[in-house]
Image (cartoon, one colour):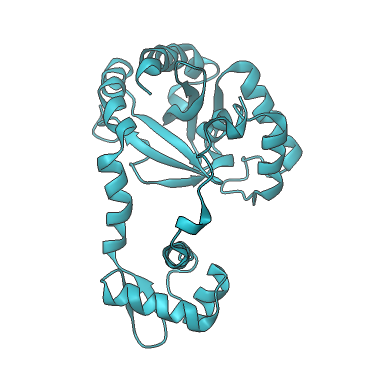
Length: 260
């Protein structure tokens, strides 16, 4: 499968509202490292002039999506409505929920369904935790793709050219010292995931945690989503994680194939 197999068809640019796209770029310019910015800073990161960025920022303030002290701007919780609207209205998160919930009760762990958005895995659905203290990602969470098992299996469905292009543009960073930050090493791991048809990532994002993922393919073999489980590594020593939980993930993935 290639990266472009499920791409959105081209849209006539004459039908586009360029201002909307620029406003969204301003919102996306805010990150964990840039929670407060001046108009100049926002313009730099959004690819706009200071004057244009300031107009978009002031509009966000007017409509309740941002706040300002006169110099700096920051986003307000209302912005979450944009993502929440997708999670509530999207078809796939609602359809997979019963499946991952049953599997969660079966294996005693929390399952997640996610997708690739650029260079991040975005988690769309999560089973209700079977334990008082559960491990996993809440819907809406975004994580660099190279540090979670879902990233490897999603990228393993790219053809070689699309994979190489993705890697060339990716910013590799390490959270624990265990994640592959060398492009060649990462590529080898993705190709291994392609052969195995699953991937296990150990302590890439958090010390002591391991993740196991499989691709979720539709009836035509196309892949937009992945299914994973995150566990405490010490509870599944050696090959116990794949031995006990990989059959569960594969069974669920096959059961969901007709509906995604």
